[in-house]
Image (tube, rainbow, N blue to C red; front, top):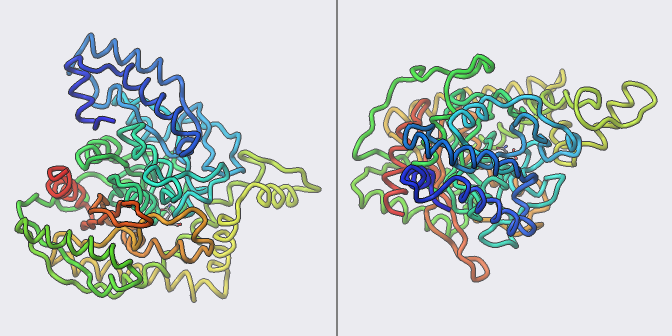
Length: 471
Ligand code: GLN
């Protein structure tokens, strides 16, 4: 599949048409999806939208919206009016969205064509897409392995070549980690840069939507369309909220050496070290930094996140949305609907979250985790006074085999480098830094660049220089 930039140029030049490209996307999906299961729903009405785009290009050429005719896949926890929005949960199996999420409205206004919705871990809880109520997604690089998660369907959709752009959501790494496992680019914006209106809430203080693409330039373009103040989400921020950071030719990178000792596979660490060397060779400065509190990020995240999950998921009560089970009285309807509708991982987090918020435990757990979060922000601000970016591997291992990690804790550990970013609200990007070999197969692994609050433009700038230009 071409990049967004290439498609746009070829559409304007008349070398390709949206109808041709959308037909190709749908063919690809119909051919590969029976095995990969990246998509939960395929939108055949994309064909009609593509014909309209053909006509618009004929009439207006370059004077058309920037994503006109570009096929896009959307994680199925983001609302598209009139389409099923399941969150990959049995409880919403037959639920149809009644409005467009703000980001969908914005993408639509720029001419994007939605070709299907993608699979995820139920309500975005997980790191392998094995928690979907509608089957596991396989990694297109090696179908014996998971694509990562929770936006595993979106990462696989790009990696299998069906679309140049898929939209995901990232609460603790769900865009970046699957990007790393599938060998694509994944972006998690500064908290508040992108509206959450019309996203199924997981952890409201952590959630952000971001693009998965083949190039940093494409991620930048799509992010810039999706971002901005939104009156429907009071946590969105204006563009000038944080000081503008100028772009530079040479940057200073901070490597948190101690943090990297935590269970990172040796060959992933070698790939990372080689990446660091290539930065130095390109004339950038690399220094060691200390982020002792980042090591507590995983512990804090797995308290804050379930606390927010437990309150956000209270709305699925068998009355307002989706599945409604028979019960003797109202309370019984709630209990039966939730018992039947939610999968085990979602139940585990609701129980944990309810516990840490209960009186008597609140101060010991939730209060402490929020305090740790505040301290992490301070620690980070100090480090960013001396460096432009902090870099880590995106995940400690490459994609693991389907069914290999049965213990939920072993999957939580995959989030070690990504969750501190959500807890502190800063932006981060993941792009491929090389491959490591497993069972005779070369598996992609990603590097994560973390920027300070509002440093989104600079992350794209460095990502284009380091990744796109070397590709
Ligand atoms: N893997 C993390 C979790 O299970 C992140 C999920 C996400 O970002 N939605 O919570």
